[in-house]
Image 1 (cartoon, one colour):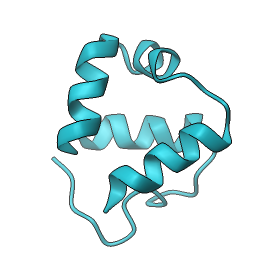
Image 2 (image 1 turned 135 degrees about the vertical axis):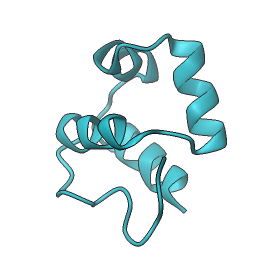
Image 3 (image 1 turned 45 degrees about the vertical axis):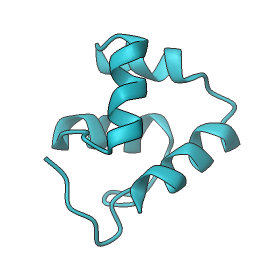
Image 4 (image 1 turned 120 degrees about the horizontal axis):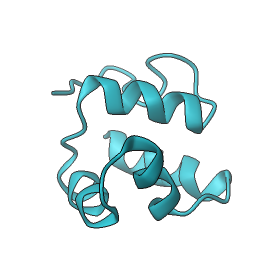
Length: 66
């Protein structure tokens, strides 16, 4: 599942979810909801790959996204 890997990378990079939400242009609450539901769209995933320095498709790893 992508969510545990995503949370792991956020923690490893010592970033706050609020900071990532701001970079994505969404509210912290919306980010939390998307994180809980796993409903990030392609552009959000691509941006998080950049922010968290993950190789392309790194977060997905055989997972689907919106």
